[in-house]
Image 1 (tube, one colour):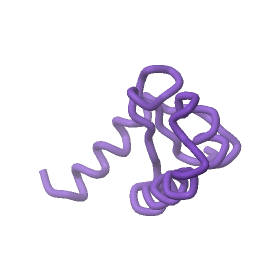
Image 2 (cartoon, rainbow, N blue to C red):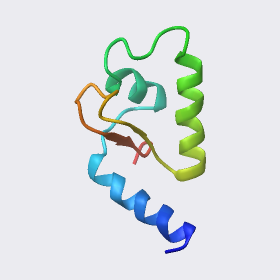
Image 3 (cartoon, rainbow, N blue to C red):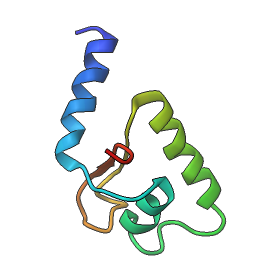
Image 4 (spheres, one colour):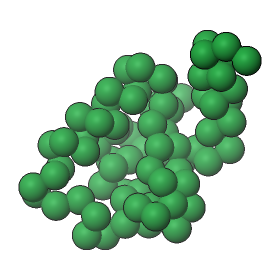
Amino acid sequence: MNKPEMENTLYNEMKKYIVFAENLQEFIDTWHKPGMITDFNREADYADHKADMEKYGYTIIPGSSSSTGRIVSYYGRI
């Protein structure tokens, strides 16, 4: 499998973990485990998620950092 095929597969695979938010900041604030984002790393975390959205079309929060204890994904307002 070449890289574009793999990225497309991951794009579709992560849809089963989709959650909804009005915008990227709401996704981060709502779905990160309380205390995971501090004032110190808030801007860096937002920048990382924004870069993922621009590059891949979605972003995720892994289960260890998620308020649900499971992976969650965000594809923007769809």
